[in-house]
Amino acid sequence: MLIITEMIGADILLLVFAILILFGLREGLLHRRNLSRIPIRIHVNGTRGKSSVVRLIAGGLREGGIVTCAKTTGTLARMILPDASEYPVFRPAGANVIEQVRIVSVAASYGAQAIVAECMALQPQLQWLCESRFLKATHGVITNARADHLDVMGPEEKDVALALAGSTPLKAKLFTAENRHLPVFEHATRDRQTKLLAVTPEEIAAITDEEMEGFSYVEHKENVALSLRVCRDLGVDRGTALQGMWKAIPDPGAMTISHLRFFGRHIYFVNAFAANDPESSELLYHMAIDRFPDIEKRVLIFNCRTDRPDRSRQLGEACVRWPVADHYLLMGSGTYFFVRAAVANGIPEEKFLFAERQSDSDIFETIIELAGKSALVVGMGNTKGQGLSLVRFFRNRSILKETVQKEAL
Image 1 (cartoon, one colour):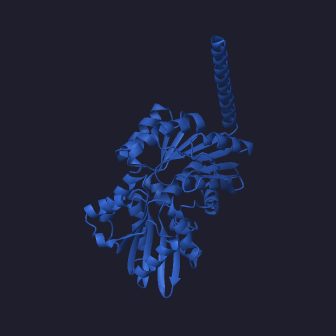
Image 2 (tube, rainbow, N blue to C red; image 1 turned 120 degrees about the vertical axis):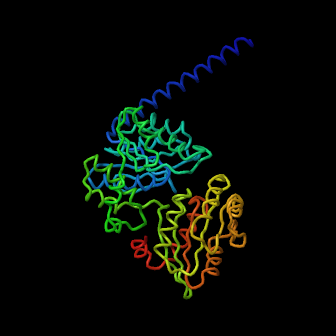
Image 3 (cartoon, rainbow, N blue to C red; image 1 turned 45 degrees about the vertical axis):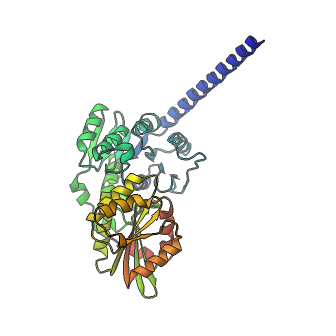
């Protein structure tokens, strides 16, 4: 009887395995069929600007009459439909790269001629998987390679470029605005028989200030030049593509400026939380200072995360070399990583203010006390966590918001 029971149990187990294999084969077949129904597949990777570039390319293609779906993974994961409406990506068990299969299915169901998807993987092997199995891009895009997520893609910046190169498509085209690590991408494209199209400094310089004024938020010329290059390759002329890009809804983490007037004090709050590597953060800080040179006080807010200790340490070490701020306000979690690095490199301890468990309104009151008659407040580090809610707090109290954003930087 025991032997018979074991035999029945083994048969059931084999049956379950067979069903799972058949289910996997069926799902794989359906996914490949969905991919074949979308002739233009654009996979956007990079350290900074991925979500913005996805939205810019999708806006340009829509304006050019190409039925386009898009998906961002940045501050808030969003599916963007052909009419530019968008909705949150449902994640019952958290973020998982396999959700790209569902995104492709949705795009195919809308009759999309093009899909623009942000790479959501950090692990190098998963970046390869997302491209070679889930997207099979006709157009790969790598915005840049910066020193971020070094615990996963490091330890050096060149290692980040090598990891990003894993998303190079096979026998297709790869566009990039990166210039320091071009040899890495040249090697990857040769290996995968793909054409490399690098945006030149001249193309970036050709983006005029008047064209940048069309954006209701602070966009970067590198992102616009890269997106225009992709749209041009797909037959959308510059003017048409720019019109679509200006209309595109910005990512929630896009850099904006809020101007608050509070009992005679002027507060200019710059949302730079999404630029969380040292190089990008410093660039945006300099841009903010250039825009508001006569401010009485400067306050830098760093939103730290316990699960990103390397990022906190990098920012703590780097900010010592930036123009001096009057105060450094720390929020989030794991702020000691930042403070330890900053103090060790020369920032006096008395300049730090700790707001790890403070509400947005408490942080606002602290800033008001520090502001004097005018203050430039720049948020950096991480959008996730309290960063996004603090941005909303300032934005909802801003005066002349649209004018300030269009004129900013």
